[in-house]
Every structure is written in C-alpha cells, then in structure tokens.
Length: 212
Image 1: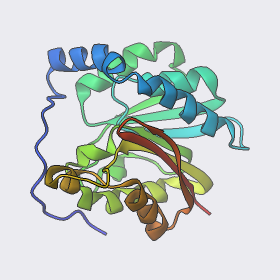
Image 2: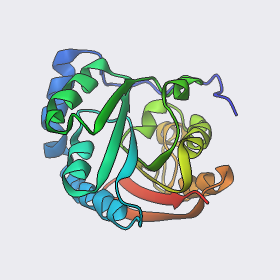
Image 3: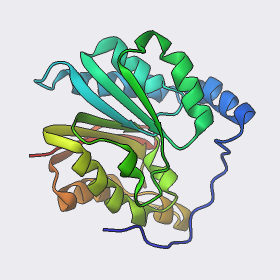
C-alpha cells in the first residue's frame, strides 16, 4: 500500500505557529465539550483490556489531553506520543511532566509514507482523537490503518475517534472524511476484527477493532 498523490483538502489550522497552537489548546475543550465524554469512553475501553501495564501509542497527540486522561486512569507502562507539530509536542511534554518515566515523544508526519520508520512496533493499544482527518484526504485512510495494524501486537486494540460524514455529505466532507460504516469496513479490509462504533459524539465517532 502507498499514499496516492491527491489534491489535499486545505487546512485552516497552523499547527506550527506557537501562538495559534496555544490558543487552540486552551480553547478546544470549551468548543468541544463532548471531548470529556470521549476521554471517559477511551479510558473505559482501555480498562476492558485483559493485559496490565499496557504499551500505548497515540497518533496525533496534540497538547496531550487524551494522554493525560489515560495515564491518570489506566494501568500503562509506556505511552508513546506522535505528532507532526513540534509546538504540540512541547505542550504535551509540559502537560505530562509528572509521567516522565512512562512517556516517549516522537515528531513524525503521518502523511509521509515512511513515517512509521521512527516508531518501533509492539503496542497493545493504539488511540487517536481528532487526528486522522489531518491526512487531508479520505483516500489516504486505508493506508494509515494498515500501518497502524502493523504496529499492534496480536490481540491488540485500536481506538480511533475522528470527524465522520453524515448521510447528507457535502463534496468537501466526502473528500475529507469517511462515514462510520466506511471506517469500519476499512478496518476489516486491512485485517482488524470486530470493528464497531463505541461512542458517537456530535460530528465525532469513537470506533474500535482488534488484531487477531
């Protein structure tokens, strides 16, 4: 599998600008109150895993809000955070300073085909919140899910939450996002089992699957 050359859906965010990143981070929970519900849903799914001392990988960690929620509530031995924005990683490092012995930070752009070269495989759990759409085109999602599948151990779980298309999608959304059913069928296509929707929240959906 490889990333296709596509016309990207433009972004209205500048995650390389320190002032913009700070404003986004300070305001995201206020503008997105459903994220608190989603944090609890992520933690509940992690707690259902039978293995203790989990090795967790987060794709697109942003300012570390989800990581903080999971590290506070779950039995995690190692938590690896990846983001393409050095400014987001700075905020994550500050937020997660009390978890220094458990966290690893990697700057990598998951739009690049070889981004996983910087990430050693072997994770029990992969999580992501509002990051997959930063691929900037839905046609790239299957390749990303295949790459994430390869990073998991047998019996591992993936939890993806992202913007999803409604039935009445616009041309912009059709190019940018998938429907829930499209996400779940893509999980199956790359080898995951038991794909399902866990928690719909506004225009977001938390979805899960496992690796045999």
